[in-house]
Structures are given as structure tokens and as C-alpha cells.
Image (cartoon, rainbow over all chains, first blue to last red; front, top):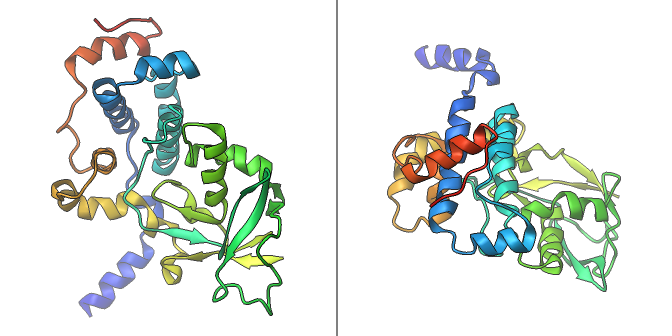
Length: 191
Length: 78
């Protein structure tokens, strides 16, 4: 009976009651993140000159942090901050093992996004006539070129081509460890 | 063509809050922090995620820079 009561109680607790970070906590956490780069990041000056990104100029970032309305949005901002370094060796990771996948992968071939592997368990050929070499044009009506730009912060590398290739992989395989809102995908996608 | 999004925990995915990193991390934070295999960024994100707040404050020498920049005044570190 106690278990039943507990289950009922949990059932009526709205999800919004799950605590989110306060603005003060988010600002403090972001400062800690910046503190790491201030203390340990050797190529700070180089990135400043090469990309015009000053990792220690955090006033604009703090303003944006304060305006985030959820923890996941805050983490998105942290991802964007680290991605601004354009550093293959650096990414903002979160302790989540959630991964959403469409069942196939793509990569850039002659600057086109082509399917290069298919999980036939998830996508049987008889039901889905997609084959290696097919070009991915859009997902849910959004052109892949726009997706590659919008998602580039999730696959930022040292040069644009590498970034596009890693970002291409993120379009159909979305790990929440690097994409905070990965769990927000719908049940299906129109490709 | 309509394809399904498959995920690692499909049966539970209807409730996105289950995947909220904070919910997971608040339970596992202490273990994660002391895990010898944790890499630098993961430990950093654990601090961000909560549970150990205040253990690793901003270095004192950085504070004037942050305060100055937060107030809109530029400053440089020594």
C-alpha cells in the first residue's frame, strides 16, 4: 500500500518540479568553465588572433547565460562557448548515455552528403528503399546545408572540412553527451 | 520517406526529463568525481552539473577580470 501511495504521489508531481539550476548557479558554473580555459588553455592568444574569439571576454556570455530558461539551454550555451575555440581537442561533454539515431550514417563526398552505411535491422531494404550512395537532401524539411551550419557547434574541429564531416555524422546519430537537446527529437523524421 | 528515431532507451524516451543530465548526475555525481578514468572534460562537466558546487571556485586572479568584464569595462590579466 505504501508503494502504491508513493507511485501515486510520484505520478502527480509535475515534471516542472524537477529542480533547474538557478541563474546564480549557472553563472557560477560558467565562470568555472571559463576558469579552466584561463588556467589550462595554452593556445588562448592564438585563438584570439586566428578566430577573433576571446575566451576570457565573458560578459556577453554571462548575459546569455542569465537569459537561459532551462538547464539544457544553458548546456547548449556551454557547447557553443567551447566550440567557438574551433579546437579538435576540446568539446563540452555531459554525463548522458542517450543517443538518438535514424539507422544510417552520412558523410561528405564531393561536398555532397551521401549515405555510406545502413543498419538493415532498423531499416529493412524491403520497407525502406534507401541504399548506400543516396544523397541526403533534408531532414524534416530542413535542407542539410542549413543543418550542417546549425549543428556545426556539435562537431567543431580544427578546420571547416573536418567540422562539416563530423557534423554530418551528428545529423543522423545524436548523442546527448554532446547535443544537450538530443532527446527532443520526435518519434519519426521525414528524410 | 519517414524513418523512426531509434534511441538507446526507447521504452522510456517518452519522458524527456528522464534524460535530463542533472537528474542522472545528481545521483551519480560523487561516484563520477572520484572515478579514476574520468577525463578532464567529464570532470569539468560534473562540476557544472551540480553536487560539488563550490569545490573549485574561480581563481582569485581571474575574479577582477570577470568583474570588470561583467560590468562592461575591459581589463587584462597581469
